[in-house]
Image 1 (cartoon, rainbow, N blue to C red):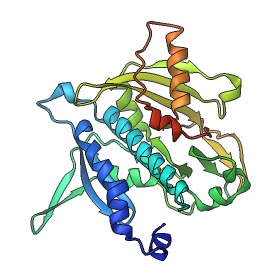
Image 2 (cartoon, rainbow, N blue to C red; image 1 turned 90 degrees about the vertical axis):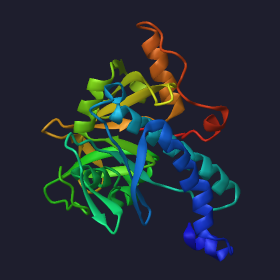
Image 3 (tube, helix red, strand yellow; image 1 turned 30 degrees about the vertical axis):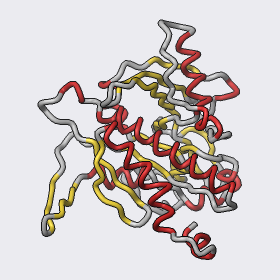
Image 4 (cartoon, rainbow, N blue to C red; image 1 turned 60 degrees about the vertical axis):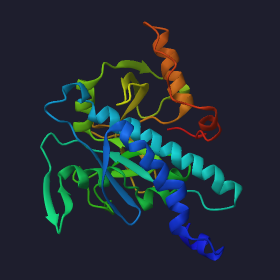
Length: 286
């Protein structure tokens, strides 16, 4: 992307500032998020909980909502990129939770945050080049798939859980964050139709308020980790591990709301999808 912009005598810094960083900055206050740092193309954000504000103890819910909004910024930018024959943006998002307070160091007044959640979020946002280049990966489109390597396979990016990730414009939630999320919200489980199901997955749907009092629907996909033989995904891993994806596809969110409403008191139509977002909605889901 940066090379193409330079070839057209355009300034990459101003382009990304106007179309990526500034729109994201405008989202932070509504979800109580702060920038930790920006390094290259990586942006680390934090959401804290404070002892004297228990009514705001929804840090994982807010992180999930903010991640969805960030992907909407990317989708909107990709519409413009296609119109101007520019490469599309691809990124991965990871949400990690630590129940321990971070440590802060200071370099001439500049605050430096130390937390295991930073490294973990980086792992969750990664995408295996081998999986992405494979015929299997080329069919996946956007989303998250987590794989357990066969004994002979090498993980190209060291991960504490020894798993391989495919994350293209997707949002992965680690297990501690998922466990915390279940304490924040009351979820309804939705079984997927056979045509929408893969890896024994199902959906969990709930709603939450942002800091401005607006309600949002949150949909989580729980799916089984499968084995990777270097070319394709196979059967479910023997240890039965699962992974968790925050759904950003408006059609899948609408499906989850519809299925939930058929069973119990209806959820409000607050999926957060505008007419503009529908035009940028992903056409592939896994």
